Length: 409
Image (cartoon, rainbow, N blue to C red):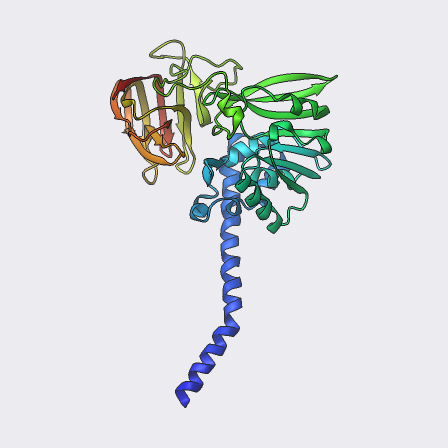
């Protein structure tokens, strides 16, 4: 009888305490995410030049971990793209903040977003603006984003399933338009639906070679300013299939591997995206007039540049990779990713990473070296991304004249 009484008492205590334990656990988790958001803002945004206080406050406020898959929550506040299903990704925090800052939305603005994806960019805009109208062409993503935004009580964000390039005419004109997928040219309906004096930011270009463009509508005409290089995943649907310029996966190439081209004179090499802690240098180059230098003093910060291209692993057996490298005072960072290196990431037809080959892992100080390596291409590879730089290491790394030659299978 006593044992039964003790068990009953313990059960009663557990029932009474369980809500407090659950609530306490959630509170601890939320506090951890808040600290991670603050670190993200400081290291990935403020340190990279984001200054708009409204944008920074929104990035501190919106819970990015709610917009990624459960399996990726531990990485939610890293400055990287993460898969969200349906061959799509959530943009890195810096890209979201950069696009929002360039758009410069105000509290009374009405914004059209093309390409809802996870809903994260719409939520950031919703934390700043009066109303956000966002369109997603993938039905499953549209439904997921609608549900997520409702649960997080973003009542001023309105989601619609459909072709975003047609705009949302019944709610036009818009003060701001943001496009988070990359068309080959600017869709006319979006131009028509932009208010006089309004702004649009849009990544335009070939499938793997895109640049942000800032468009301002003045006296019915568009002023076009080309900004930094970027890479958004290929779109879904007819527009993507009808591109006039299609990539050639049987002849992959490195674009601007000599780092000579900088058409907008912003100090960044054209054709390379997500550049962090990098700059073009001219003194003592090994090829041409310029090379790319990576410098990093903080092992928690990224120092990198990326470039994507198509590759057909059924036709290409390997890549012969060649480049010049020089480094000074390089100290590896924590973990496998904290290495000064050239890394080739391979992805299959649904953009799942299937292999990564690391060339380098340099440390210390080395003068210019002619680096050559043969990289095997998995038969299932359909895309690849070059990631070059210090990554999480500290010190200084110089790279020049990056070239590849495909070896037929």
